[in-house]
Length: 133
Image 1 (spheres, rainbow, N blue to C red):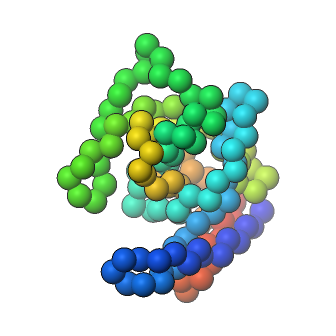
Image 2: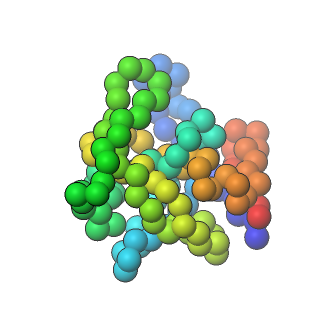
């Protein structure tokens, strides 16, 4: 299987228009399926979704859940809960851990954990992202 995703053009406050790598994924939890286009981020340890995406997937804060804090660039921590879900990229479906942010203001990220070990991922000349298994 080989999949190809075009980079997405977005506006940067500093640089103007920039191209960013995204991929179509389907997040699956019980009977809920949510298609999304997260940034493909080789610098992210784990995939990250916002509070509202987790709500769409039926996530609830449970007594057994542990609220952790993660940080990226900058000093502001983001409260998260690690959840297990299925993810589908193309025809490949697999179980993965995902960081569910308890706030809304986060980018959706496709991180390395449980994902990058399943695919060869290639960024082509700032225009396309290729996934091959």
